[in-house]
Amino acid sequence: MKRKLLPLFAPLILSPVATSTNLSAANIKTKISTKKLKTSTADTKVMEFDTIACNVYQQMDLREEGLQYEIFNKALTGYYNLRKEGKLGEKPYITIVDFTKSSTEKRLWVIDVEGQEVLHNTYVSHGRNSGVEFAENFSNDKESFMSSIGFYVTQDTYHGKHGLSLKLDGVDEGFNSNAMDRCIVIHGAEYANESIIEQTGRLGRSLGCPALPMDDYEDVIDTVEGGTVLFVHAANDVYTSDYLDHASAMAELVKEQNEEIKATANELAKE
Image 1 (cartoon, rainbow, N blue to C red):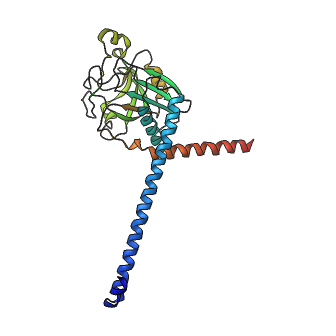
Image 2: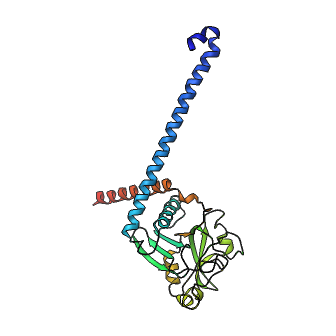
Image 3: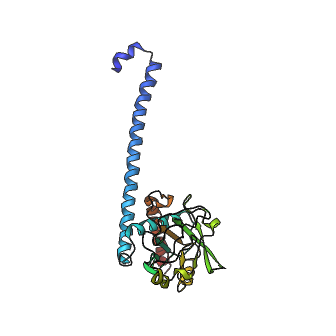
Protein backbone atom coordinates (compact mmCIF):
# COMPACT_ATOMS: atom_id res chain seq x y z
CA MET A 1 0.00 0.00 0.00
CA LYS A 2 2.81 2.35 0.87
CA ARG A 3 4.53 1.73 -2.48
CA LYS A 4 1.33 2.56 -4.38
CA LEU A 5 0.73 5.80 -2.51
CA LEU A 6 4.28 7.07 -2.47
CA PRO A 7 4.43 8.29 -6.13
CA LEU A 8 1.16 10.22 -5.67
CA PHE A 9 2.18 12.32 -2.66
CA ALA A 10 5.17 14.43 -1.84
CA PRO A 11 7.67 12.73 0.53
CA LEU A 12 7.44 15.63 3.01
CA ILE A 13 3.78 14.84 3.63
CA LEU A 14 3.71 11.05 3.56
CA SER A 15 6.98 10.23 5.24
CA PRO A 16 6.27 12.07 8.48
CA VAL A 17 2.76 10.58 8.61
CA ALA A 18 4.05 7.05 8.12
CA THR A 19 6.79 7.53 10.69
CA SER A 20 4.36 9.13 13.11
CA THR A 21 1.93 6.25 12.68
CA ASN A 22 4.64 3.69 13.26
CA LEU A 23 5.92 5.54 16.34
CA SER A 24 2.40 5.94 17.70
CA ALA A 25 1.77 2.25 17.33
CA ALA A 26 5.09 1.48 19.00
CA ASN A 27 4.37 3.96 21.80
CA ILE A 28 0.92 2.50 22.36
CA LYS A 29 2.41 -0.99 22.45
CA THR A 30 5.08 0.15 24.91
CA LYS A 31 2.53 1.90 27.11
CA ILE A 32 0.31 -1.18 27.14
CA SER A 33 3.29 -3.40 27.99
CA THR A 34 4.41 -0.98 30.72
CA LYS A 35 0.89 -0.83 32.13
CA LYS A 36 0.66 -4.62 32.14
CA LEU A 37 4.07 -4.83 33.84
CA LYS A 38 3.06 -2.31 36.49
CA THR A 39 -0.22 -4.13 37.06
CA SER A 40 1.58 -7.45 37.28
CA THR A 41 4.14 -6.02 39.72
CA ALA A 42 1.42 -4.45 41.85
CA ASP A 43 -0.55 -7.70 41.90
CA THR A 44 2.58 -9.59 42.94
CA LYS A 45 3.19 -7.14 45.80
CA VAL A 46 -0.40 -7.50 46.93
CA MET A 47 -0.06 -11.30 46.98
CA GLU A 48 3.27 -11.06 48.81
CA PHE A 49 1.77 -8.72 51.40
CA ASP A 50 -1.25 -10.98 51.86
CA THR A 51 1.09 -13.94 52.43
CA ILE A 52 3.03 -12.05 55.10
CA ALA A 53 -0.14 -10.77 56.77
CA CYS A 54 -1.64 -14.27 56.78
CA ASN A 55 1.50 -15.74 58.34
CA VAL A 56 1.54 -13.13 61.11
CA TYR A 57 -2.19 -13.65 61.68
CA GLN A 58 -1.73 -17.40 62.05
CA GLN A 59 1.40 -17.18 64.18
CA MET A 60 -0.40 -14.88 66.61
CA ASP A 61 -3.52 -17.07 66.70
CA LEU A 62 -5.61 -13.96 66.09
CA ARG A 63 -8.57 -16.02 64.96
CA GLU A 64 -8.66 -17.53 68.43
CA GLU A 65 -8.59 -13.98 69.79
CA GLY A 66 -11.77 -13.21 67.83
CA LEU A 67 -10.17 -10.95 65.22
CA GLN A 68 -11.09 -11.55 61.56
CA TYR A 69 -8.23 -11.87 59.09
CA GLU A 70 -9.67 -9.37 56.59
CA ILE A 71 -9.78 -6.67 59.27
CA PHE A 72 -6.26 -7.43 60.47
CA ASN A 73 -5.02 -7.30 56.89
CA LYS A 74 -6.52 -3.84 56.38
CA ALA A 75 -5.11 -2.57 59.66
CA LEU A 76 -1.64 -3.89 58.84
CA THR A 77 -1.81 -2.31 55.39
CA GLY A 78 -2.65 1.05 56.90
CA TYR A 79 0.10 0.67 59.47
CA TYR A 80 2.83 0.34 56.83
CA ASN A 81 1.41 3.08 54.64
CA LEU A 82 1.25 5.47 57.58
CA ARG A 83 4.82 4.56 58.45
CA LYS A 84 5.79 5.28 54.87
CA GLU A 85 4.36 8.78 55.22
CA GLY A 86 6.23 9.34 58.48
CA LYS A 87 3.04 9.82 60.48
CA LEU A 88 3.86 7.29 63.20
CA GLY A 89 6.18 7.21 66.18
CA GLU A 90 8.53 4.43 67.23
CA LYS A 91 5.99 2.10 68.85
CA PRO A 92 5.12 -0.82 66.53
CA TYR A 93 1.54 -1.06 67.79
CA ILE A 94 -1.81 -1.29 66.03
CA THR A 95 -5.14 -0.81 67.79
CA ILE A 96 -8.09 -2.39 66.01
CA VAL A 97 -11.79 -1.86 66.73
CA ASP A 98 -14.31 -4.14 65.03
CA PHE A 99 -17.71 -2.50 65.07
CA THR A 100 -19.31 -5.43 63.25
CA LYS A 101 -19.29 -7.17 66.62
CA SER A 102 -21.87 -6.72 69.37
CA SER A 103 -20.96 -4.29 72.14
CA THR A 104 -21.28 -7.26 74.50
CA GLU A 105 -18.07 -8.67 72.98
CA LYS A 106 -14.49 -7.60 73.47
CA ARG A 107 -13.99 -5.88 70.13
CA LEU A 108 -10.81 -3.84 70.66
CA TRP A 109 -7.32 -5.29 70.29
CA VAL A 110 -3.89 -3.72 70.74
CA ILE A 111 -1.28 -5.65 68.77
CA ASP A 112 2.50 -5.48 68.91
CA VAL A 113 3.47 -6.05 65.27
CA GLU A 114 7.16 -6.64 65.88
CA GLY A 115 6.74 -8.71 69.03
CA GLN A 116 3.72 -10.50 67.49
CA GLU A 117 1.76 -10.26 70.70
CA VAL A 118 -1.74 -9.16 71.68
CA LEU A 119 -1.17 -6.57 74.40
CA HIS A 120 -4.82 -5.78 75.16
CA ASN A 121 -8.26 -7.14 74.26
CA THR A 122 -11.19 -5.34 75.80
CA TYR A 123 -14.65 -3.79 75.41
CA VAL A 124 -15.20 -0.48 73.65
CA SER A 125 -18.28 1.74 73.38
CA HIS A 126 -19.70 3.28 70.23
CA GLY A 127 -21.60 6.54 69.81
CA ARG A 128 -25.18 6.64 71.03
CA ASN A 129 -26.55 7.59 67.60
CA SER A 130 -24.57 4.83 65.88
CA GLY A 131 -26.83 2.10 67.20
CA VAL A 132 -27.95 0.27 70.32
CA GLU A 133 -26.20 -3.07 70.76
CA PHE A 134 -24.45 -2.83 67.39
CA ALA A 135 -22.81 0.17 65.75
CA GLU A 136 -24.53 0.56 62.38
CA ASN A 137 -24.44 4.28 61.55
CA PHE A 138 -21.37 6.47 61.34
CA SER A 139 -20.61 10.13 60.80
CA ASN A 140 -17.80 12.65 60.57
CA ASP A 141 -20.12 15.53 61.49
CA LYS A 142 -19.95 17.58 64.66
CA GLU A 143 -22.66 16.88 67.24
CA SER A 144 -23.73 13.75 65.36
CA PHE A 145 -22.96 11.70 68.47
CA MET A 146 -21.93 8.88 66.16
CA SER A 147 -18.69 6.94 65.90
CA SER A 148 -16.37 7.56 62.96
CA ILE A 149 -14.64 4.77 61.06
CA GLY A 150 -11.19 4.57 59.45
CA PHE A 151 -7.57 5.17 60.37
CA TYR A 152 -6.45 7.40 63.21
CA VAL A 153 -3.05 8.31 64.63
CA THR A 154 -2.88 8.66 68.41
CA GLN A 155 -1.57 11.94 69.76
CA ASP A 156 -0.75 13.10 73.30
CA THR A 157 -2.71 12.63 76.50
CA TYR A 158 -4.45 15.09 78.82
CA HIS A 159 -6.61 15.00 81.92
CA GLY A 160 -10.20 16.11 81.40
CA LYS A 161 -13.68 15.38 82.73
CA HIS A 162 -13.10 11.67 82.02
CA GLY A 163 -9.69 11.65 83.66
CA LEU A 164 -6.77 10.45 81.52
CA SER A 165 -7.73 10.83 77.86
CA LEU A 166 -5.95 10.32 74.54
CA LYS A 167 -6.38 12.63 71.54
CA LEU A 168 -6.99 11.07 68.13
CA ASP A 169 -6.18 12.51 64.72
CA GLY A 170 -8.45 11.07 62.00
CA VAL A 171 -6.53 10.75 58.73
CA ASP A 172 -9.32 9.52 56.42
CA GLU A 173 -10.81 12.61 54.79
CA GLY A 174 -14.60 12.61 54.91
CA PHE A 175 -14.80 9.71 57.34
CA ASN A 176 -13.01 10.76 60.54
CA SER A 177 -11.08 13.91 59.63
CA ASN A 178 -13.12 16.02 62.08
CA ALA A 179 -12.08 13.90 65.06
CA MET A 180 -9.93 16.62 66.63
CA ASP A 181 -12.65 19.28 66.24
CA ARG A 182 -15.24 16.86 67.61
CA CYS A 183 -12.97 16.06 70.58
CA ILE A 184 -13.10 12.35 69.76
CA VAL A 185 -10.71 10.76 72.27
CA ILE A 186 -10.03 7.47 73.99
CA HIS A 187 -11.14 7.66 77.62
CA GLY A 188 -12.51 5.52 80.40
CA ALA A 189 -16.21 5.39 81.30
CA GLU A 190 -18.35 3.65 83.89
CA TYR A 191 -20.90 2.81 81.19
CA ALA A 192 -18.23 0.87 79.26
CA ASN A 193 -17.86 -1.82 81.91
CA GLU A 194 -18.97 -5.45 81.85
CA SER A 195 -21.39 -4.82 84.73
CA ILE A 196 -23.49 -2.63 82.40
CA ILE A 197 -23.76 -5.52 79.94
CA GLU A 198 -25.04 -7.74 82.75
CA GLN A 199 -27.65 -5.13 83.69
CA THR A 200 -28.84 -4.00 80.24
CA GLY A 201 -27.72 -6.65 77.76
CA ARG A 202 -25.42 -4.22 75.99
CA LEU A 203 -22.57 -1.81 76.66
CA GLY A 204 -23.31 1.83 77.44
CA ARG A 205 -22.74 4.37 74.64
CA SER A 206 -20.64 7.49 74.26
CA LEU A 207 -21.05 10.73 72.32
CA GLY A 208 -18.82 9.28 69.61
CA CYS A 209 -15.64 8.46 71.51
CA PRO A 210 -14.22 4.93 71.77
CA ALA A 211 -14.74 4.68 75.53
CA LEU A 212 -13.05 1.86 77.46
CA PRO A 213 -13.68 0.02 80.75
CA MET A 214 -12.41 1.78 83.85
CA ASP A 215 -10.37 -1.29 84.81
CA ASP A 216 -7.92 -1.05 81.93
CA TYR A 217 -8.35 2.22 80.03
CA GLU A 218 -5.26 3.81 81.57
CA ASP A 219 -3.08 0.84 80.64
CA VAL A 220 -4.38 0.90 77.07
CA ILE A 221 -3.82 4.65 76.74
CA ASP A 222 -0.29 4.41 78.18
CA THR A 223 0.47 1.65 75.68
CA VAL A 224 -0.77 3.34 72.50
CA GLU A 225 -0.25 7.07 73.07
CA GLY A 226 2.28 8.96 70.98
CA GLY A 227 1.86 8.14 67.30
CA THR A 228 0.39 4.66 66.93
CA VAL A 229 -2.33 3.42 64.56
CA LEU A 230 -5.98 3.01 65.46
CA PHE A 231 -8.16 1.36 62.82
CA VAL A 232 -11.92 1.41 63.37
CA HIS A 233 -13.64 -1.12 61.11
CA ALA A 234 -17.33 -1.40 60.32
CA ALA A 235 -19.65 -2.94 57.74
CA ASN A 236 -19.65 0.09 55.46
CA ASP A 237 -19.56 -0.26 51.67
CA VAL A 238 -18.87 3.45 51.16
CA TYR A 239 -15.62 3.54 53.13
CA THR A 240 -12.41 3.97 51.15
CA SER A 241 -8.93 4.97 52.24
CA ASP A 242 -5.65 5.94 50.61
CA TYR A 243 -3.99 3.88 53.32
CA LEU A 244 -5.38 0.58 52.00
CA ASP A 245 -2.83 0.43 49.17
CA HIS A 246 -1.32 -3.06 49.56
CA ALA A 247 1.43 -2.54 46.96
CA SER A 248 2.64 0.61 48.69
CA ALA A 249 2.52 -1.12 52.07
CA MET A 250 4.59 -4.02 50.70
CA ALA A 251 7.18 -1.61 49.33
CA GLU A 252 7.52 0.00 52.76
CA LEU A 253 7.76 -3.38 54.47
CA VAL A 254 10.54 -4.50 52.10
CA LYS A 255 12.40 -1.21 52.57
CA GLU A 256 12.30 -1.55 56.35
CA GLN A 257 13.45 -5.17 56.18
CA ASN A 258 16.37 -4.20 53.95
CA GLU A 259 17.33 -1.42 56.35
CA GLU A 260 17.26 -3.86 59.25
CA ILE A 261 19.41 -6.36 57.34
CA LYS A 262 21.90 -3.63 56.49
CA ALA A 263 22.01 -2.38 60.07
CA THR A 264 22.59 -5.94 61.35
CA ALA A 265 25.38 -6.49 58.81
CA ASN A 266 27.06 -3.26 59.90
CA GLU A 267 26.90 -4.30 63.55
CA LEU A 268 28.40 -7.69 62.75
CA ALA A 269 31.16 -6.01 60.73
CA LYS A 270 32.09 -3.84 63.73
CA GLU A 271 32.49 -6.94 65.89
